[in-house]
Figure 1: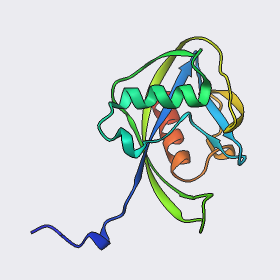
Figure 2: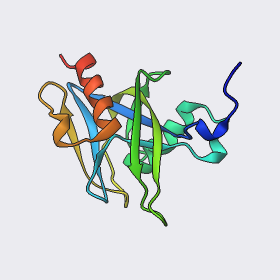
Figure 3: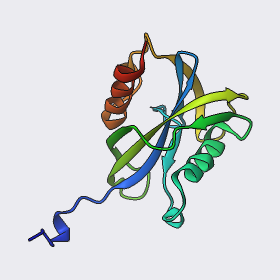
Figure 4: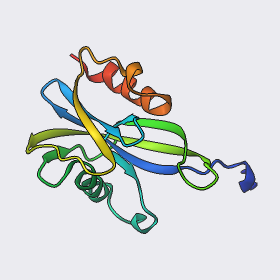
Length: 150
């Protein structure tokens, strides 16, 4: 019989993360806290029944603007588990399950907003993820590079 004690279950936030590919590069963003990240973010409560591709469209528009055009693979192929301390009252530590989707850049330019300060098209063939990422995001980017660099 299954374990019904919910106190032993680990609650996770769920985020969509996008590996936006252009030539032999992929896009990484630096947030306002000085941390590097992939485009994307957490799913809102109101998006429980929203298709993942629609959530990705929202996050991409919020983080890189609506001028950028891309095609997204319909299913995630990199899974990440990340732990982070929130910048909110009490600074709780949360767990995030990241669903990594590959996307192909088509046209347009990246536009940054208040949540990011810079971006980089990282070359898959010589990018050193340890210099940019930590935790579960580092594991996910490392797996991505292992699978997809030339």
